[in-house]
Length: 178
Image (cartoon, rainbow, N blue to C red; front, side, top):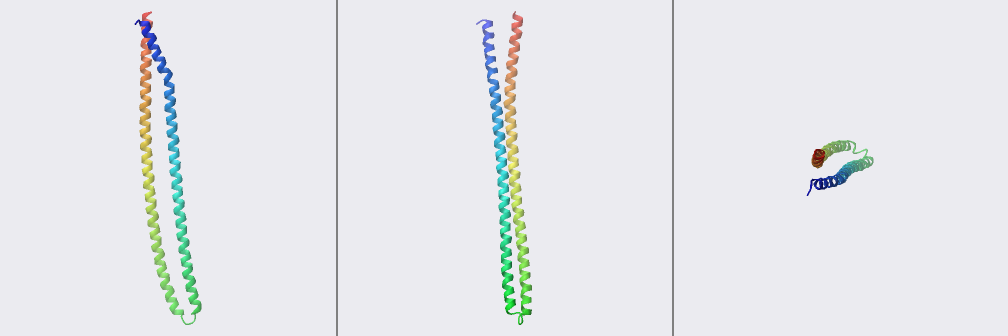
């Protein structure tokens, strides 16, 4: 095989590589866009899930408070009814009973408040841990994607530099040969 034939063959190889390089870069860009969209969707889904859970917790809390209010109203209504019927003869006894009921209700309310605060704190802690875990996972995924993308780009650039170097050598040889 003559030098010209070799050069012609090498030129064909270089042209073939140069023709496929834009497609590969476009493919990499498309993959990056898909990954970005997927991550945006995942983040939006997590936000929606978090909002939904917070709304559900608020509704549950409101429901519990409404039930407690209803209970308290029912108990107070019952006490007022008994007071109305036995007002003259049972005034002192009723005052003692009211004090006892108020004390118990106060203790129950304080206990319920403490339980609700503890439960809310626990839920906030778990949600915080889950969000931190998700953030760490996303950071890890993004870091690995960046590394993979950097490696792919570096490989493509190294190959391109090799082809350009080969082309330069060929052009130099052609120049010297003439």
